[in-house]
Amino acid sequence: MCSIERLIDPLPATLSVVADRHSLRPTSSFPRRFPMSTMTASPTVRVPRPRTSSTRTAAGARRPVRAQVRLTRRGRFVVFLACLFLVLGAALFLGATSVATGESGGAEQPTRVVMVGEGDTLWAIASAAAGDGEVREMMHTIKQLNALDSSMLVAGQKIFVPVTD
Image 1 (cartoon, rainbow, N blue to C red):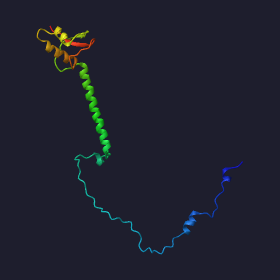
Image 2: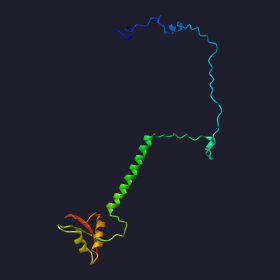
Image 3: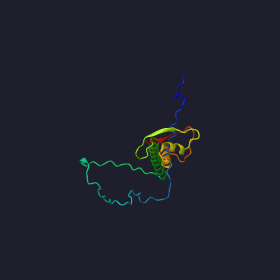
Image 4: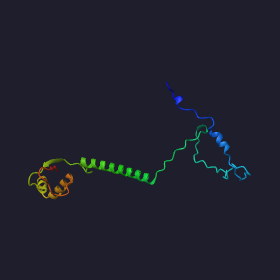
């Protein structure tokens, strides 16, 4: 059998990198008169910082330093947009539930559902539900109850009409 140790020949002993490195000393004519200094020219005076907290922790232990999060301009803009969308979403959700439940903020009045027939008008429905001389007020009330923009009605439409005694 052939082993992998026999396939790779060992390097000759004469090829030593360390030996070659020592033999190549630079022959520079630049004289080294002074050794290099390790001293630095930085001030060593420390300015004491005043303590901002009047309470001390137990046994002189230091409080852990909180990591500071610094947002870039783009990051601040993204956070602003996220907060804006959150507020707008909450406003739309709460506003939609108010409209869907028919909350008008006023006192509730009993109503009945009337299905609009072919050729019916808001004036005809209001005059049937209102007393004498109160047709315009009844039309206005029906518009508010059903959130109608105009007096136009469609056949088959269901509208709420106040019940009068």
